[in-house]
Image (cartoon, rainbow, N blue to C red; front, side):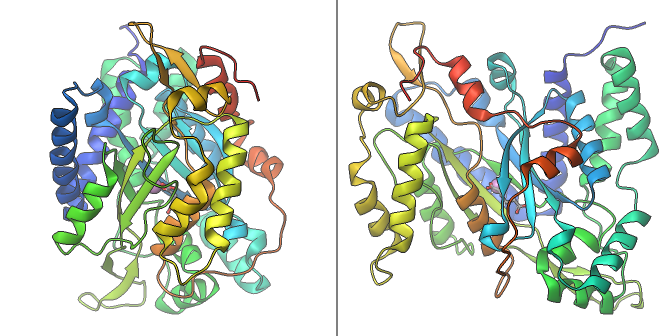
Length: 414
Ligand code: OOG
Ligand code: NI
């Protein structure tokens, strides 16, 4: 038997293949990569620093699946690449009928090798109010199979043998890529599509196609304000506000911005060749990552973000955010002394913030909304259900705070 390939390497091969595929599918993504590479090089030159090795390849993506079975199989596929479900995100309070987790590597060495992560959302069928439509959604999803037989066989092989050899790993990457590919051919008629979209545009995106096409792939920048300015300068239709905390001397958590979803030609089952339907799904996004916050720091963040959001709407978002966050300490010593961030000691003995590797529910909701156009927001009064999500997933999600605490130099006070 030949040697098993390190899951970090399979993840790296898959992330690279996915990036190549998305670059070919969405040319604007290539432009975004070029802008980010320029900005990052400039920032590093200004700081006189070398980039962390992982920065250049760092990406996150997002997919939306329709059933518990799809989610559970997805978890098994990601496990082959050393990616585990971390965190639970409920998007229903933001008017989006899904709940989610992020599949990502969890150990320091794996994160350093390649931190590729995928935000994965599961449709909450119980939030589809119309019973007839809910039943139809169930029936449509039951008919599809989002993994190729080859991908399923290789997942099972990896589980049996504890991994894949080199040739199997390559075959796995090729086979799994099919699940993430865009398909212009819908699996439903234009009438059914209209019904689904009338319920929620996201429901149409999840249900009407052969699989959970990757809907964005996000590079990490060292200066999101510079990238945002450059996107606007080039006439790219960027979202008008940056999600997350304001710009700071010591960056915290995650700041994100996106360009709006593209309107793409699709073909419904009742359309003749050459007749075009339309669907908006895929978009571009960039992110800047800062320090992971302790539970105490996160509570403060959530409270201040709430204040900024409920503040005077006549004041620009950026200004409201800056005002609210004025009380969030912005120097390393105070952040550490007050137990607001996780830090660890570097080789030279200095304390450095631990990078936040996860997502933010309010920001994610903003990203969803900005790419669904128009009246995509609905009121869902249902309570969130991590237990139900975990049953669908087939396992518990990992608590992100526990991962940071284990990496941290000094256990945080809070
Ligand atoms: C996922 C949106 C969330 C992020 O970066 O917060 C996300 C989606 O649109 O499917 O990717
Ligand atoms: Ni994203």
